[in-house]
Image (cartoon, rainbow, N blue to C red; front, side, top):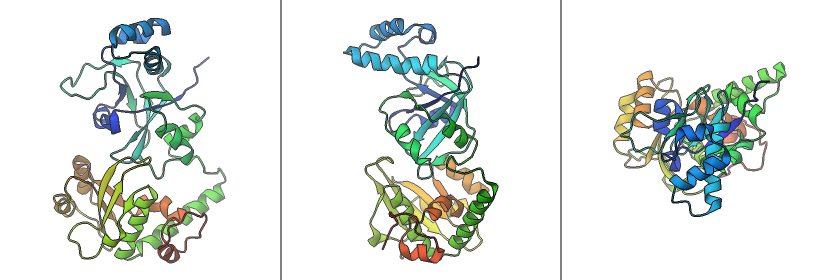
Amino acid sequence: MAKAARCWGIKLGSAGRCVPFCERHEIVGIGWPQVDTAVLAKASWATLSQHVKATCKWYKTNRERGSATGQLIRFGRECSIGDYVVYYDPPQKHVRICRVTSELLRRDFDLASNDDIWQFRKVEYPVPPIPILDFYGALKGSLLGPRMSFWEIKGDFEIVDRLARGERPDSVSDPELEAAYRQLSELVLKRAEALNEQDWEWLVVDYFKAQGAHVDERHVGGSGAIIDVEARFDHGELGADVWRIQVKRWQNRRVDWPTIHKDLEKVGDARFCFVSVYGFTDDAKKKAEEEDVRLLESADFTRFLLSGRMRSRIRAKLKVPLLGTDATTE
């Protein structure tokens, strides 16, 4: 009988430090370079525990050694080809879902890199990154809560599988309702594109505030040379960070890379997000990925627009009904 696929959560370094390394090599992994991969792949719990005790001298208690052994067993023995692994990328503020494609391997490449990834598995990415704001709410606690390197996300395989297939777990199978939802999304998005540039600046403010950011609304838009919005994350699920955001609404015109680069040179050491209502050129998308600039266009705000969580003035222009009690007010 085939083994049932499972779903796992992983932290790729402190604050996601090892995410770029792993995505560059299309792998997920854990540290513990002192642990023999051959032992990890085959040893019993008791044998591996003794191996950890002998090689990882910094663990002073049985509890610490037991926690490490458990995580190693899960990654090295229980995780299988075909399982899903989910991780949060704090710098990018998004979630990745990947599927395991190899047995346990030991890193023998890019050895000059100081990324603490040694026991690893090859993976594939069935869907693009999912912004944390749009990530399925019931899974956030299972992904962001555990304070370990590798753990099982129990009972949610079907939800993750639907996300990996590009579906919404909270969607219904009724074709009429699905069609109505698509029409509503298109209508709200069309109305959003008709908002003026100042409205879009405030919409972006509400979007970042909905993710837990602090925004000093006294310094939004106006005649500033560069930054329309500065969003500060100092706690909560999105972690500590500062984002500086430029917003452009050029009617039916995509933003090119020179425009972005001109502003990028002046944002300092903060993260940079560029919002273009009508999108970006292909070259801008390519260069932005290389330079670690986050690009957002109108379609990226669809779920947020449907949530009605923006300030009442903008919600009234969009004619979005108030479905909850957490909408932003002026």
